[in-house]
Image 1 (cartoon, one colour):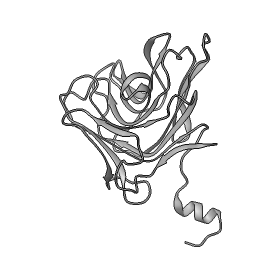
Image 2: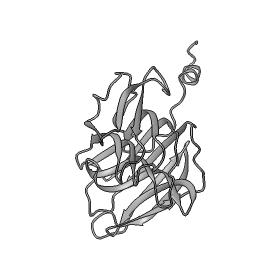
Image 3: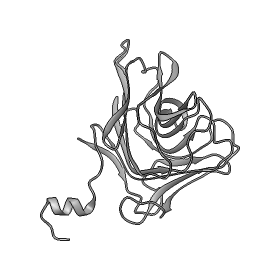
Image 4: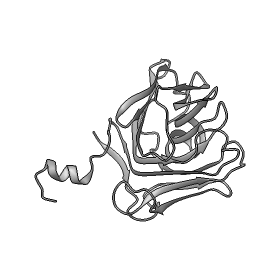
Length: 232
């Protein structure tokens, strides 16, 4: 496994990322101390209520169209609002051609006909659809989320997207023809298909890793020390 990028936000800012993006009245910070997985700081993304489609508060990392297969893992992912209306989704991890422009896939809670599930808003043959899993996301709960994307080879339907929740595969879509857009950016935080109509939303996350292979949940510091026989 090759780690392409990682940030535990212990710099207390977002300087490791290529940049950040937040629409008016929204915000994203790397100095929040509400819900770190380790250390002192974590990311916090905030979207205000009553905003329009595409409201966002996130950070982005430029992978420069160098990869066809990527994994992104984040620890202590927590949120306080679920998608309120049918067809809405909250993209916490996502892959884009540009910065919040020309998406390939978005991963997070989704509302399909009133049922809330983990979902992926994925692209194939130039069109989007939401695929959902079997588990139900719960507010104010810590999750390990890991998103996987395979960009198809030219002329073939061999692309795929997968979402692992706490180390277990829950959502998958294969046989995708999704190479009409380049894989330029990894984005983390919050992107809403439609911002929550009535409620502000906060998303927290820590220990973000981008890799060319599956990463899995991070082992707690105490357990890691015990494994290597180091005293507490």
